[in-house]
Amino acid sequence: MTLLQQAKTFLKTHRTHPKKQLGQHFLINPDVLSIIIDAGEITGTDIVIEIGAGLGCLTAALAENAKSVIAIEVDPLLYAELESQFSTDADVQIIHADVLKIEFSSLFPPNTCPKVLANLPYGITTPILSKLLEHANHLCTCVLMMQREVAERIVAKPGGKDYGALTIGVSYYADTTLIEVLSPQNFFPAPQVDSALLKLTMREKPRVLVNDEEYFFRVVREAFRGRRKMLKNSLRRFASAEILIETFAELNIAPERRAETLDITEFAALADLLQANV
Image (cartoon, rainbow, N blue to C red; front, side):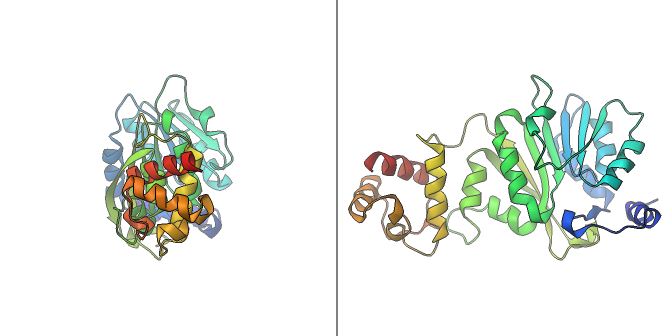
C-alpha cells in the first residue's frame, strides 16, 4: 500500500478528513523520507524528537535508524493510530500533546543532545521555531519541513527582500541550510504553495555576543518594522537624533542605510553602542 493509499484508507475508515486548523498535509512521497533521514544524519546513537508524527511513516523510518524516537501528535485520532502501530516498539514513545503547550525540556533525557524532525503546520511555524530556539543549548540539529517562503526568509542574505528579523533571529542561534524544495504533489492534500526542508545546526554559542539579548532583538525588530525607512528614522524610539547620528558615526554606519543592508555583526555592535549611549 502506498503512502497516499494509507492516508486515504485511514481517513475513510475514521470518516474524517485532513484538519485545516492543524495544517495537516500528509507526506506521500517515500523518497522524501530518505532525504529527511540523510539531512538529519540520523545514526543508531541519536535520540530524535518528531513533532507532528501524523500516520507514522517518518516515525517508522526513524525507528529503524535512531536509538530512540519521541513522537508528538496533537490529533487524537492520529495519536491512537500511532499508539497502536508502535505499541510493541520499546524505543518509540508516543506523546499526545500540543507542542506549543508542552514543557519541551521535559522530553530531553539527561545528558543528551536530541535531534528534532518535524513537518511544521504552516500557520504556527514561527511559534514552533521560537520554542525550538529557546532550547538551542539542549538540541543538536533540527530538520524542519515548512513553507518555502519562510525557509527562504530564514536563509536569506543581507540586501535581499527576504532578509529580515526572522533571518537574524534564527541565525543568532543556528547555522541554516536549505536542503530541498518540494512541490505540493509530495503531500496529501496538496498545499497551495511549495514546501522546503530546512536544517538548523545549533551553535554552541550565539553567532554574535551582545550585552543584552532582549535589547538586541528589540533593535532588530524595530529596524525591520520600518524596513523601507532609513535607520536614522526607524530607530528614533531608542535615542535622540543627535545620539543616533553619533552612534552611527562611531560605527561607520551611514544613517541613510536601511535595515536590510546590515548584517548580524553590525546589528550587534549597533545595539550595544546604542544602549551604552542612552
